Length: 181
Length: 258
Image (cartoon, rainbow over all chains, first blue to last red; front, side):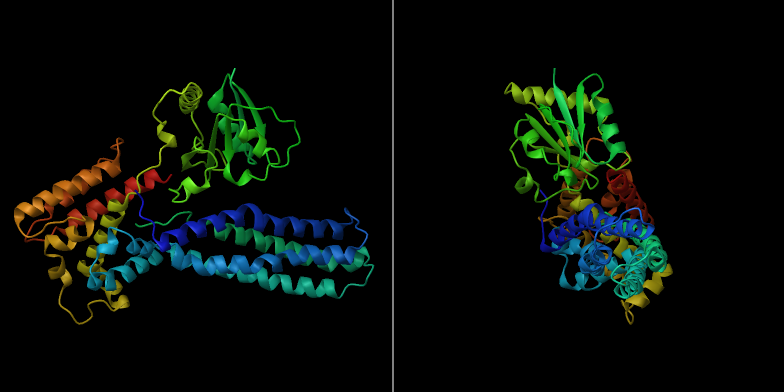
């Protein structure tokens, strides 16, 4: 029977949120970006272009905090050190636990995890940074933007999409379960 | 004729599941599909597609609903999340490209199981619907092995230095010289006061490992048993035995998780 500690529940929760990210949050951001690109290309003509563009681009702001939190929590909640909160490893003496737990965590990081975490955080920051000029450009658009007005925005949106793809890949590279060795 | 419904937004995974029921009537659904529903006796349901508008109706009328997903982890909340008592889940990750989907043999087992439910006949759950062991003993043993290797192997001095472990102490091998260091953690009722008690505890521990390793003995757990057998009342296992056991456990756990 699985002994479920709070740490293991947190790991399960992280995996659940990661699933939601992959299937709901992140696709909604990408769909919104593609909608904005279609508006820029003239394929879609909403009545209020400016409003639609703003709504589409704001999807990132709605979701970024969830994603940022997920990435920040990964190292703690998906580390094999969580096994020390349940039997058998919870039976370690305080002396053993004082070195074995941080050692287990460090060895896990050394198995490529540190790089994956840093890559995911770095690509997140790149996406976050890439959205700012887009938001500023849209805020500076006239109330009835012409295709020429939208051209620079379109280029920026395409760059953001490329960075979103890199972010999706870096998150996919994070393990789906807690690895112990 | 049994009707089977598969609700899954990923076409490759859906196709792979359909192949498990060749010759049977299978209807496929996905989140935004608009085809009219046909009530089915068996519903296979990808977890994340629960927004499918007709999912409630399909599941309510089914004899057996089987959930599956890309994350096949043991789920401590499964019993709270399942909607009906007979709901089941596939306890392995069924990937988006269809890897690990049900095989035709497993599809056949599922049909037999569903039929037994309908007829009120007690029957064993097919193995893919059984919650796997949590491997807690093997996981703990792997972590102890890693600690032993990192602390004892001179090549890992840089790790110890980085961790500021034993910086001013002599070799920490003395700490692992007793059976108690291993067994008091791995076994709740460990007895390590005499060679005979240590032997009995190790026998019990081997049984635990055997249960976690399960019926499938690939890879052969022999290196793990050898490590356990080498834990003596007054001496420490060799580094080679510990490294071999760790590699053995790593192979086994990786195999379970793919």
